[in-house]
Length: 154
Image (cartoon, rainbow, N blue to C red):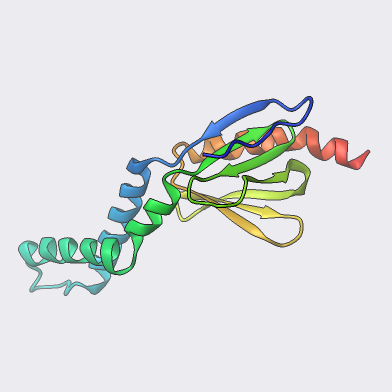
């Protein structure tokens, strides 16, 4: 995996990688909700049919709707937070790691329960998918961003 070169005076605060457990929880949650919405709920509810529906929906999401390939693309993501930047490196990217200065981050918020959405000052966004401990990650980014915002104002 390509490494991002740190700038002079830059230190790594945290590093995060996607978790297969978080991905599987997302896949299961989407599967159960979809199955509930599509299943015949009422007097004719049959548990066996419901469980078969969950299995078929899980296969559909994993294979037909490409959730499996999403995991394959994201599993090698490595997010690094430094005192100056948020950096993304990925084995599947031909380009060098990408980064954004912390003072360009407008906000960080949970996204659908399994990701963080990072809103940038220029209107663009990026999604940090399948990271464990989203609230902690969000807080770390916002805490590192505060001093960077003060320095940018000077």
